[in-house]
Image 1 (spheres, one colour):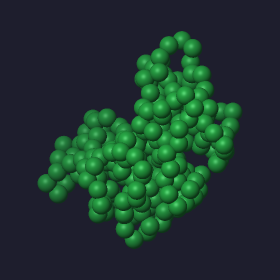
Image 2 (cartoon, helix red, strand yellow):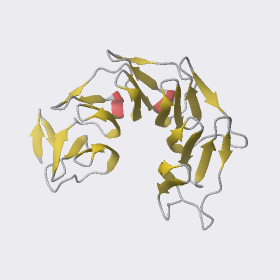
Image 3 (cartoon, one colour):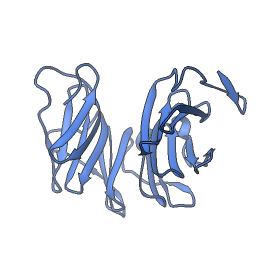
Amino acid sequence: GRTDEDIWCWSNPLPTGSDLTAVWAANPRDAWLAATDGTLIHWDGVRWSSSCGGAWALRGLWGFASTEVWAVGDGGIILRWNGGSWSRVPAPARVDLLAVWGAWPRDVWAVGERGTILHWDGVEWTEVASATDADLRSVWGAGADDVWAVGDGILHWDGTAWTPMHPDGYSGRGLTSVWGLAPDDVWTVGGPTSTILHWDGSGWTRIAAHPDGFFGLSAVRGVAGDDVWAVGSGNGTC
């Protein structure tokens, strides 16, 4: 280990000895990982190096460029990378933050426990009413006025307010990840029974998961409308 401002940080072996919770990459030679011990690990195309984020577990990463990356985590910690160093940015809430996403550098969202939603306008973070006290674990948007937050519920931002959504026949609880290709092609997954929901621009539809059993799905990503992957625990790949 090594110390950084009186905080012990993971040193060897790299990338880290703690659980990894998030990843974001600008290109094949510029990628970041976040870990539960507060370590931020960078890949430069050749080797891994680590930075100390602090004594807080980090849960989410998002960036726009090599000089503009955000990390969020437990206790309301928010960190910002400017291309040379990580610095802590004041946050209006002390609850655990679980995910971060932005439409552009002056329009960034962070979500977390107890319905917490924070917004960055390029100057400061402020808390925005969410109309829920449910935990929110993931956030993604197709644009500044079309953002989704999921967790123990589904919320949508239309540029003015966050509104709860209620898919037919499903409470929306236990969701862990949301991602999409377009305003009318959004996916969310989660739950112990392999919940998969799809938004087509007018409503959410529940999609049948793998037929061979149950597993908890934790993330969803894709490259095209007919090429989307969901992964999780157990045999969790769809």
